[in-house]
Length: 346
Image (tube, rainbow, N blue to C red):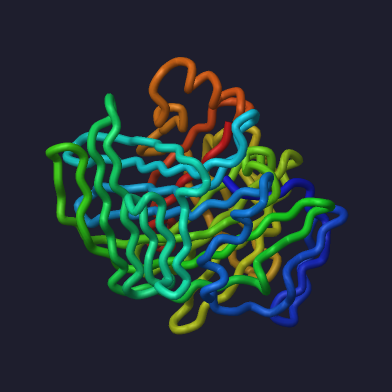
């Protein structure tokens, strides 16, 4: 989860003006551009208080899914750390997950190689696009051995408004949808269960002041499964105001969409609870409405499942301000599109 609080501003994108809803906000510059090398590499590793995350979502043709996060977090009394976590769903009928935490100095950037490495066990290499690779390998008592080695064999172009950075008072939030959709192939494994897989994937990079759990009431990412017609991340602040962006692909052209409202049963969805029925998203810069049914998740997952031991779980819950859940699923819209989504919050 990586979003801001209290938005009221005017967003001007591609020569069009959009009304937003918070005070003291400075939006990114007006141009919509393709993502580049600067969007891939870390934005604030040297900062003691600011955090960021690289988030992957993979949906494989055999029905298995994998979710990978590499993120910096600020832990009270311990300082800034790098966290790595993975979750498998329906890997040979099972679900499995693991989370690891390391000192910040374990993350290394090799810009001449277009590579980010954590202990040489967790790797992102190649600029986002065709040929980009992610590696996750871990072994932990009570969790077992994990492997994910996936390469993008094709990729739609990522888009971002300006530098992707919103200023909110003295804080900020930044986002870049690096790969909205791309075909992938590779290998995943948990202990002796190993699969050669292919399917599609999504990648984003977010960065912000403070921990992301301080910034949004609820957040979700979306990827359309057939050709990447929509992909991106949206969120709601504590007042139920939506923000973030999705990329819409029509033919050879891609547009950046900014949310105007998120409705549930015709009323504003405040985000204080997980949705019970479909959500309708209207846009500031497009006339159509995107309908997503998130009421029937295929997986409900708590972040605390990544931690072994009562003390570790208790400390993490206190640090985050509560227990964070992920609802993950798939829904088919009336227009025939199939949407894979992950929604998170307390």
